[in-house]
Length: 551
Ligand code: NA7
Image (cartoon, rainbow, N blue to C red; front, side, top):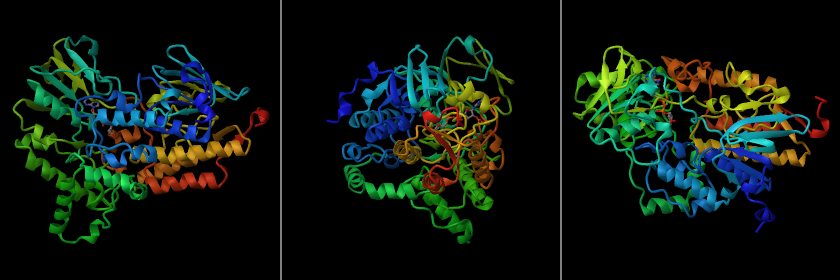
């Protein structure tokens, strides 16, 4: 037993060298790293349990779009004792996994639950952050490590009359813990992003009638979910190093091989169709990553994939007008995050499901009896809003974060986030974001592992070099913004009506349109991290408390 095990429990402490806010993948993994380094740490979490996004998004059908074996952390202690049951585990299983990690790595006792961060204020003289939660509790730390998640703050329902609807109203991201029974009810789902796509088929099976209100159709891959048998689970345990190597080497951090071919490598149309069909049968992101490697770079490649998906929609959905409404045409495949569905398109063949195009007739308001578009009123018993998130910066802008000289983060970020590597912001010393805005956009746990390891190395280096204050320089933050913008512009993600994508914050009203992620892939981002460390953190201003005021 280490001496740390005799330390007071989280409930008694109000100070720690490092405080991690958030107990999802990033927060839990960060606490594990701090424990390993012997850095006294505390965790604050708004929910009553661990899980982050997997705690809140417990709507029917919620499951990962990443294959289980790469949607995990490479912790040997956990890997030997944990077995995933499905290719795409459901919400409850992912939350159980995160809880298992927290317990197995013994970090749960460092976390204070039901503590939603209200403010974080830096004091230059003491070099301490004071974190205050909504319940009025205050905590101090040298290192403030927000692990707030990218999909944390739901967009407010953008309709008039939300309070007037007399029936039940639910948001997918704040789903009740008890089962919601839609039997015999007239239900509406608004939104057809990943959450809508997952919840729609299950509500359709229960409701008397389901009306889906769609604004933008999506390129939806069939999941082809299946249970994982014992042999597969054993292979994961025995060959975990090889699985992680594959995921770490993959552009988006999935345990997959690149397709190894581009559009021009295949000249026969028949052969291209065969390749797409094979990807479609494998399902999920394998369609994106195992067909052609230039889908996101070459318009012809993307057009071919997009048309193949539309042909599948026409093949599946019996009513041609509905099939056409479900067919995306105004932006390239992958320019918006493509959802993965289970029986999604098939659901529209049910007698009790209607699709309404809200482009033609936008939703005007909720009414006491239901929902009114510019064309008609729909009488409803329940409305499910799957209308998305204030992505990436949302959790930061709703918290009162103040850096040096009382400067507010929300003011500095009024035109979009300013960070270096998505980890550090000029003017906010020792605020080290665990996967903050402008960090890498890849399979999340792989990003978490990469970033937490880097932060651990940094904290150790600061100790070894007798520094206790670090922040990105404004020059590096500016350069980083240019880098991620240039990467984004070099892909087809910036084509078509990309302006609607949450990748650039365009799905939240009034939000500045700025690229919110580094889309250069795992290797390029990892290289940027390595360069920053190997240059002895030259892109940061470093100091110690003793030199305060000498900047
Ligand atoms: P998304 O992907 O942002 O989807 C939100 C959906 O809600 C999308 O279809 C929106 O249409 C729709 N929406 C938003 N506002 C409106 C209004 N006013 N009227 C009609 N429809 C509207 O959020 P999700 O929760 O589904 O998924 C988020 C991520 O979680 C996902 O990508 C995975 O990474 C996991 P739009 O496309 O903006 O026209």
